[in-house]
Amino acid sequence: MVRILVTFAALAFVLVHVDGTANAADIADGHSATISLDVGYVDISGYPSWTEGSVGKLRHSDSGLIMNRMFIDYSGRLTDTLNAHVVLEAYDDDLGDAIDFTQAYVEWRPVPKSATRYRLKLGAFYPKISLENVDSAWSSPYTQNFSAINTWIAEEIRTFGAELSMSRRPVSLGGAHAFTIDVATFWGNDPAGSFLAWKGWSVHDRQTRFGDKLPLPPLPQIQPGMMFDDQDPYVEPFREIDGRAGYYATAEWRYGKQFLLRAGHYDNRANPEKEAGGQYAWATKFEHLGLQATLPGEIGLIAQSMIGSSQMGPWLNGAHVVDIEFDSQFALLTRSFDRHRLSVRYDHFEVTQNDQTPEDNNPEKGHAWTLSYQFGLSKKISLAAEWLSIKTHRCANIYYGLPQTVTETQLQLLVKLRL
Image 1 (cartoon, rainbow, N blue to C red):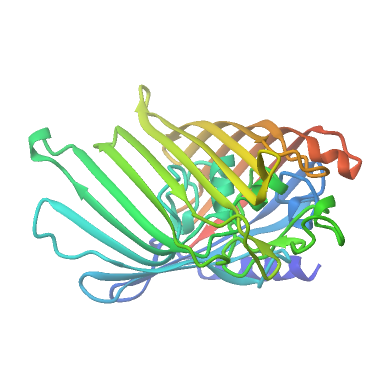
Image 2 (tube, helix red, strand yellow):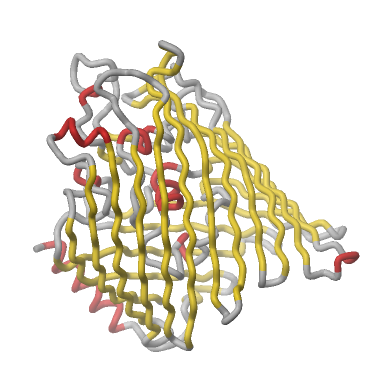
């Protein structure tokens, strides 16, 4: 009840200050901030949520009123070529502090001295993977809940390091074609892969903050006296365990606003036999491919694919103690009509297992459908209705006395306020 009262108090505060002006509030010359609050109602059918240490694929466990999300996205010009970017997120759950950071970095864009443009990021930020999370605070303008791929990125992947970007528009091709290469090195992402193996894929919109602890289901092998009893009952995905830097690289080709193709490789280079402070290091690597295009009828298409692997523990019986391969694909169609936007997305996802460790059966296969409608009531207020259905076959459900195949559904009705 207290959280509901706080929700309405925050809603009232924002409404009092809504005056219909620009989205980003100019707080000083060269500095601006976007403040957003999402509140509404959710109707749920499925298992208790993973946020409560259970096996549900959705973020919310119970139907009712929700404070879905609040964020502050700040950008500031420090010098003519140096900018700062900070994002704070607030959630109504117990996975960390009420408010914490999801991104904090500086970006240097030197004055171009040739046809090639350079950009350097230093700090904590998302790697350049998602084609749908392109709005403020890594939000999606198309759907409320992210694809399975980008849900996992939001859960476990973040760059704590440096990224160098080089882009060029060849005059010989008419200037409409742009080519970009990004390379990065990072630390602090060694447990990435553990949540995907032991909890599985999900579809939701929660982004892990720097200090969050993501609860695991009550896995048999992490119980006292079992093989992985050094594992805490939660994952801290942004921990550095082995002192080894990871890296990623992406390449992108863009043709005006009609077409974009992006491909990349990620490798955290973690030592799978290291463990520290209740967290194991997982050797996680993957390739991703994404396409964005404008179809006839002004219909937007976004499609992405990811395939990878993650291992933890010593080599045993032809594989690491926990040894998985994973893949996921989605296709999204979207169309805007004046102040209306309608989007539909299909996701497929799978986890396969190479190890034979007893009582650690992690294979999973499933798909999800998302149908989203948004209406811009004004420049600062929008309404959203979104239906989501996710069907999963997960072998580990048998450990908890639950059916291995289940369909979970969610209907969200939201008021989205943005200053």
